[in-house]
Length: 192
Image 1 (cartoon, rainbow, N blue to C red):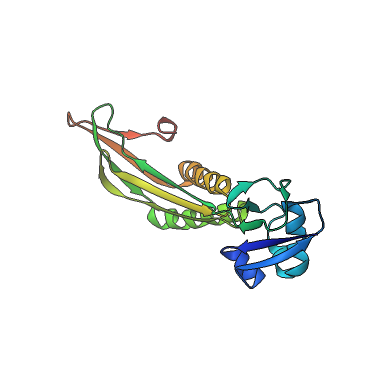
Image 2 (cartoon, rainbow, N blue to C red; image 1 turned 30 degrees about the vertical axis):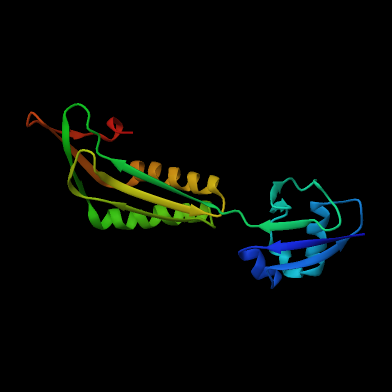
């Protein structure tokens, strides 16, 4: 038998009801065995992922790493991720600015539907977006999308999905203004 110190952080400390404790495991034992024992001693920790991030004696380790008497196992939640997309007015082809116009009432409703669709696909993600209208100078952002999720891959995916759906579904039009004074409406297929 080996007595192992255990540390809990963030949400895991709330689930365990403490930030540190100790458990006893049969030897030979691994970090995974310690986690199994933790789930027995602290039943609410069943809400932790099957394979939580773990450190052994202050070093990140795999769950099959061996533990011995006196070791310290620390369990910590993933930090998650936030993905931010800023669509900026390009400064190529002598473009000085873009004038954005929209069917605003429909655009606001469609944004709501796009965000609801993203939430349906990634229920733990939170996504928001803002699209500017009017004259936007080259180099400035015309659209901002932020997606946060417990897992970074979901934040990236939700952010990507949102911009692609905006490009397909949002009733927003743009007119490029050039340094020579010329103007041109951009067709949807021209800017995808």
